[in-house]
Length: 300
Ligand SMILES: Nc1ncnc2c1ncn2[C@@H]1O[C@H](COP(=O)(O)OP(=O)(O)OP(=O)(O)O)[C@@H](O)[C@H]1O
Ligand SMILES: [Mg+2]
Image (tube, rainbow, N blue to C red):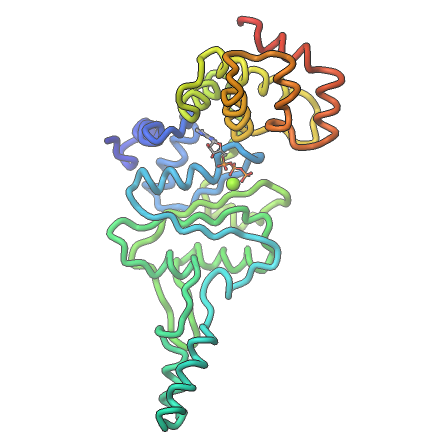
């Protein structure tokens, strides 16, 4: 089995074994992230395989994936740690019932490791895994500025301070992925700490390969025509351009309907697997459908 820390080619091969087809650019930057121990920031449109790369990397390294999904308003108590109020209360009640006084020692105990709720970031830093885990900080652009500043600190020294307990430093640094859909620009300072890669839509040949590896048993002709159709869609000015995920979903739908190749009627009926906006559907149906089907079927 290829070792992801040997060379960029081995990274590409290890990912391919798990049906993730990366180009050399992505293979190289991931190789560097793994060997230099730097976080990898992946930006790109929806459905181009950013999240999947982190999952597949964890599987290829034989380690677990710890995922932090970001959202507006995410804070330290969701991301790092919290105190389990319910457990603390239960403990106090039990002490009271058995006639113990809630003195200073008890108070100290209440804010000890036993009552700490570990959230993804603490889990990733304070790990005892033989192979360090993969930490995926997904969709960081959805979190707000303060959270980004907090992450910056964390990614600089891989340590966190919990006032009641002390400072915890990672014995072994996790492999860190950050992803962004670029709904806003990230701060320079955060970018500087990461290796950066823009994940674009794959070239046609690669997308055909991806469909073939992700949709077992797909007729070759159907895979090629579906991928070509979606490629043409990406050149149209749409509200939401379809990603690889849509190509795969659509091909599965076509296969479920027993299609061996594209046909205008079935394309029309299944277009909702590819385009998720009403305006986009109308536009393609009114203006482009027949032309796109013909284009997808034309041999290159
Ligand atoms: N290079 C690839 N090789 C194989 N499959 C891929 C590849 N890229 C994407 N996929 C497929 O596309 C699906 C969607 O990818 P993923 O969820 O990682 O996209 P994303 O970039 O994280 O999108 P979003 O920004 O919407 O979260 C994956 O489940 C996977 O099946
Ligand atoms: Mg994602």
